[in-house]
Length: 311
Ligand SMILES: Nc1ncnc2c1ncn2[C@@H]1O[C@H](COP(=O)(O)OP(=O)(O)O)[C@@H](O)[C@H]1O
Ligand SMILES: [Mg+2]
Figure (cartoon, helix red, strand yellow):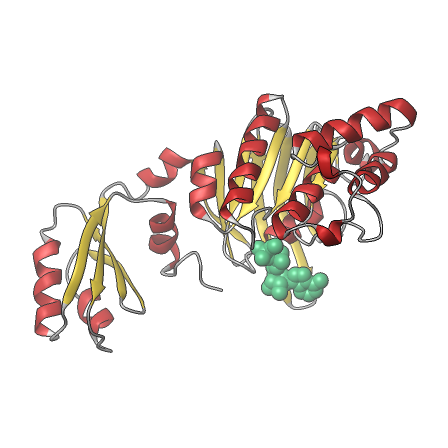
């Protein structure tokens, strides 16, 4: 294990942001930490790199204690923070070089690694420009270049794709895969289950400070493999629908999001017709209907009764 986190607790006054978290990240993997806003992802990352003190538990990185050997640990970690951490009055090149120098790079080595990092995120030809001329996606990519310039052994990316255009998003996801192919272990946090599903080997799902499930994507979806998700789009709305659907035997969860319903039901329980019947009884029109296999989204829904995207 490259990172071993055991029973970590982090409190802010009365808020327990990280609650008895244990997880292990293997060398060479892309590890996904998936959870809604406020789950505790950023706090856990800050705990790993020693930005906030933890109340109890242990964190080992590269086999070293993260506090006792803080310097050695930090030298080999690259952090791409959730909040952009770039300077508007420095050019792209100067930004990356600044972070490289913080990690002890100097002279020709610094210049070469700076150029390499800019090239990697597709910004080499814009290196002399200031970030204020950049789109949101380009700023995110510059933020990534700053975090990887020293070629760390472990790179931690905290929600690197929030609020950017689809093209920049796919560029970033590709670059995470590329870094991993080059040998970097990646800890990737997100509240987008599709990203984590596509990208990550090991996955931990976090909610309210706790890890509620952990495993590979297949292991996690096996947790709900005996279920199916019935998606219904309604033409009209009715306040009783959720209660009525939940009372059908074999229905485990039901979530109403505007006119969209997601019902998690035991497979082969014959519930499709019961659900349609219930909706007709409620006087509701069905505009569209589909049945799908469980995803990480349905794992989360089944375990917590809430959609992952809830703020
Ligand atoms: N500096 C802080 N002071 C007080 N509470 C905080 C602080 N940072 C985070 N929290 C709280 O800790 C919880 C976890 O937050 P955070 O780690 O940012 O979650 P996530 O990154 O998953 O969105 C939230 O309830 C948040 O309000
Ligand atoms: Mg966060």
